[in-house]
Length: 206
Image (tube, rainbow, N blue to C red; front, side, top):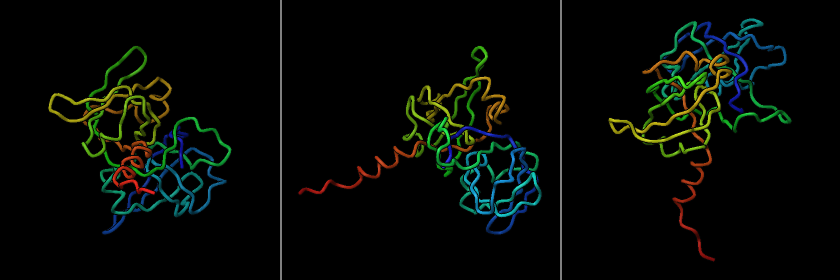
């Protein structure tokens, strides 16, 4: 479990694709002395399991076909900036919202607009995910916990939503470098899925 509060912007050091999986090595400035094999780290919001420590500043993970198909890692390249957050530990502050690290799919940056020192980002996403994005609800974009400001449909009838990023978020995550047309990983709020699933079953009468 994660909070969506990014602790470091690392980078992809190496990519080794195989037929049914891909091995990646990530570089980070975080102190990894207390990390262990099998620990979870959210990389651009995607929960990955540490499989090796090639050096004191790098860790490795294996990405399955499912992970690659749902995330922007399918088109990742060496040197790409990656938002990193180690798994939440009991007793630590929950500064963002409950993030599972299970990416639902990809959204596309529709527009970026300066609003004073802030920036308003508009993302377009598929209908299948749009139903879980609500005004003032939480959403994770590349692992960053954000609050939804508006939801709607663009001029071509595609669902979209907007979020507002403060200067700190822009400078401490890889979202500040996003431009229109780029894809991002998105995780919607899990609670909407539970409600939807429960409503699919009729209530049993006593």
